[in-house]
Image 1 (spheres, rainbow, N blue to C red):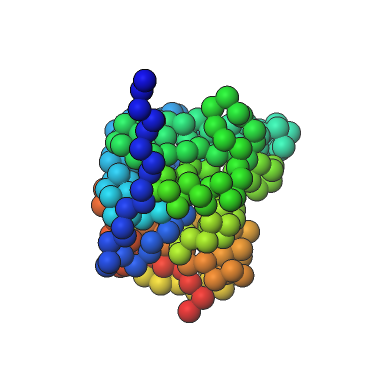
Image 2 (image 1 turned 90 degrees about the vertical axis):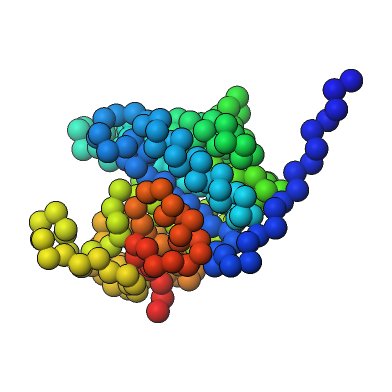
Length: 252
């Protein structure tokens, strides 16, 4: 008779870690790579999974929210005449595709992973249940949260802020295509300077486009620190140890 699998034992966390439980927001555009083509850049996916495997070895508990912009954006569909709710649901399904691809890459890197979806798709993923998600994290599994909040008119940024609060994360990490938050548009202004720190109030009042105001307000009201940085090899690890990369948004 085949032996049952050994129970997962959470790894001891590295003593120098600044953050021991995080919610990582991965933008769909970042997973699409630099080519700008629709779809998933498999090299970016593999590199991201390998870095997350190193983080798993450090004992960090990680929840992940993935965007779907590399496949379909709800706002883009609505801007072309689609019904906004219908378009947003299509965007949620795009995040499920990315979540399954990331789960496959993580498990190939020996990271135990579960996908939970805000829309019930029981054949391929668990429904989102907060206590079950927290239990997975306690057992050393990474949890990928797909389908946003399950409601139209809400972005995956808002889903990331909500899940960060629900799993009691130490911080929300947003890994995206930009280095951080700038004092002005770096595309239009050659003298634009990246800010190392920023208050929530300034972030919201200046309508910083790297994250929507609903998500930022939710983080401010619940004192959830945000780290914004580029999805480049080593950056997630550096942020976990408190190195100064990207921009830190907080109440101070």
